[in-house]
Every structure is written in structure tokens, then in C-alpha cells.
Image 1 (tube, rainbow, N blue to C red):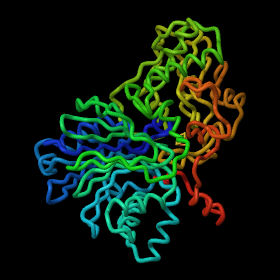
Image 2: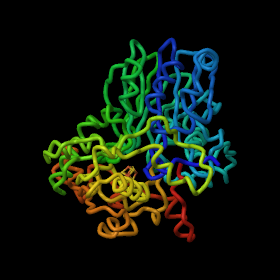
Image 3: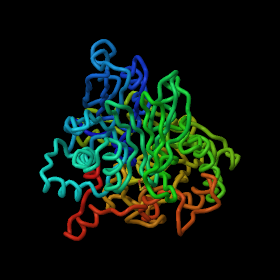
Image 4: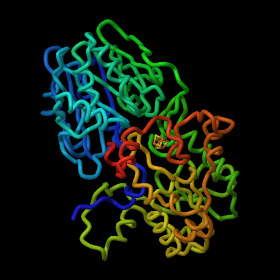
Length: 484
Ligand code: SF4
């Protein structure tokens, strides 16, 4: 039986990464490299659509970028000096190729391809309305709603139709779009998901994270601002701001876990912020110990920050295998628990008889924390004090992150003392929400107008959740995975 690696299952997962380039000889090849750098944002499917001046070409497939875009045949077939690409996690029940992006349609205004990171929180209601007016959907993706809204808009130009469409959608979207006239990059008015712009020679690039620019040798120009729509074409670069200005609410979890530590997100180095988070955590929740030990890899920068602030030595008390994929063959229950050790193993020679501060970025279901604490104890650790580099995750995300139902979030069911008893640590403590904001350079969280989306910690969602409200009215629960 193929099953999901239990370690990956116990994390919130970013569901998508986008990339686009306009004006490069080898646009599809560069896009494949850019997507490779964004692979952590979505590992189950990838796609590229290119435009050669006359026709669009597309390749979409399940699996990793490296396995899908061989340079000899596939990349050669994706001709043209412009391309956009997408990586995604498929979510429960919908692994269909028809949902793999970029999505493409022939509109009255010409070909239109779109790659989307985020989630539209009124997609189901819009879909019902479009269906009632005769639209026929090809996929179950929320992104396809944007295409139908563009297709049915009464405005004449593609740009006006696109803006008209975006004004009807709620939620989170960072988009890279390809048309016959140019490439469009845009972010929702709150800038919930990231998007940056760069330059590679004469070509312009959009990417979810700066690491994709680094990998292709591009120069970072700037972040695409919340509510900004940038058109790159033969005429140059045009910036549009079609929405009423509002205070941005970028996703705070990008800094905690989703983005690669070597990326710059909304002007901040993710690595530096994670170290600052660790330092805040040490100030808020000190403990006497022999070593600070990260759960690798995601706990490493915060653990370095904790160690530097506390003066307790940083050590690798857990070693991670880099050869375990997201899925592996799991023959039966008897060996299920061994899956944990496939990916992480205790460094028993180091930790035997020692008191440890164990640092992880978050607790989702708590199943992994329980297994790691148990593993460290079996390897001889005398005490294990768990410190979490974010506040308790109590709420689901409806903005393009795969979260379990609320009832499966440990912190939605238990207080900290109960969670500590569940994971069997000597002590457990979380970073406060103000501590997280301080690590991001703010004095504290503005309770009236928070500077970030922190809804998975606070429950304060920055947009309407129309589909969720509709479902609740009808006594249904929409699982978060339906929002992918
Ligand atoms: Fe990010 Fe959490 Fe907001 Fe989702 S709910 S966008 S994960 S901060």
C-alpha cells in the first residue's frame, strides 16, 4: 500500500508555488529550474505552459519537477520565449491530472493560462452561479473559476476582464498568467500569499519565492505588492492597482515554516526571522538543559536562535535521512512506527543521559512530537523539554494551505498542559503571538488591525469565508482539502 509519510502528514503544507518568465530564449527550461527551487511548496504535480508567439504548449504531470521535465523531449516541445509553471500538492480525493496547473483556455480574447498559489474562499458559490449561466467546468479546481469569470466578463480588453474577475473573488491568490500579449503577475489585495519579481538578462520573472530567482541566476527586483497587478509585455512593464488600498495581511506561517530559509519574503530574510523566533522563544520560555536540539530540517534556524540567546550549546541530537520521499511502501501496521525512524533517528551517542531542549516549528496533530519525544527517551535522553517556534495551531487555513479538520488539530482539543501530557515531554511551551510578531520586527500584534494573517493561531480570518459560511448554514462541514 502506498501511504503518506507520517512526518509530512503532521505538518501544515503549502499547496502551491508559481513561476513565470517573459522574454528568455529558453523560457521553459528556466521555468523547470525555477519550479525545482519551489518544489517544497508542492510535491505531487507540476506543469509548464509556454507561448511561442503563435501557439501555446503545455505539459502537466503528477510527480516531482525533476522526473517530469527532461530537457531533451519535453522541454524542447515547450517552445517559446515565455512560460509559466506551477507545483502543487494534490489533496485528498483529487489527484486528477485535470486539476494540475497551469490551467489553460481559449477565450474570445485569445489563449489564457493561469498558475495560482492560494485559495478562493467563495469559489463554490461562484461556480454554482457560473454553472447556472451555462459555464462548463473542466476541473474541480477553484482556479478555474477565474478563467470562467474572465470568459464571461462584459468588458472588452483581456486586462479589464481579468480585473473584473478578480474583483469578484475572495480569499488568497498570487497568480502568474500567460496571454498572447504578455505575462501578468498579481497578488490579492491583502497579499496573503507571496510573489516576487526579478530580472534575468532582458527577461522578467515572477516567482513565489526569491530562492527561485537565485537558482536561475536572476536578480531580485522587488516584491509584487498586495493588490498590485503587473503586466510584462513587449511594451515593457506596467503596474496597475485596481483595488481599494487596505492594510496587507501576508501569511505569517510563510516565515514560520512554508518558505525556504534562504528566501526573502515581503522584504524579510526567512532565516533571520526564524533565528529571531528562536531567540524570542528562549526569552519567553527558558529551561535549564545540556543541549538545544532541533527537529530537522525545519526546526534548525529557530534552534540556532534559541541556543545563541540561552547560551546552551546547539547540537544535532536527531539526524534526518534525506533519502525518504513523501510516500513509501508501508506493508502493515507492525512496521508503521518504523516510518518515523526512516526519516529521523536519535543521535544516541550524543544525547544519552542529557537534558534536551527540543525545538520544532509547530505542532499540528501532535503524532510526530509524541514519536520524537519517545525516540529521544529510548535513546537515553534524561529530560526532553519541547519548545515550539510558533503559537498553538488551533484553526484551519482556508487560503491555500492543507490543514486537517479542526478537530484533528491537537491545540484545538487540548490546553498546553494536556498537550504536554499527550506528547509525554518533561515540559512543553509555545511562542506567544506577540513574540512571533516581535521576531518579525513589530512591537506587538495590533489586535484591531493585525499586520499579518495569523488566523491558524488566532481564528481571525482576514476575508469572508463565503463557502464555509454557506456550508455551515446547511449544516455541512467543508473539509479544508476541498479548498485546494
Ligand atoms: Fe497562513 Fe495560517 Fe493565514 Fe493560512 S490561516 S494564510 S497558514 S497564517
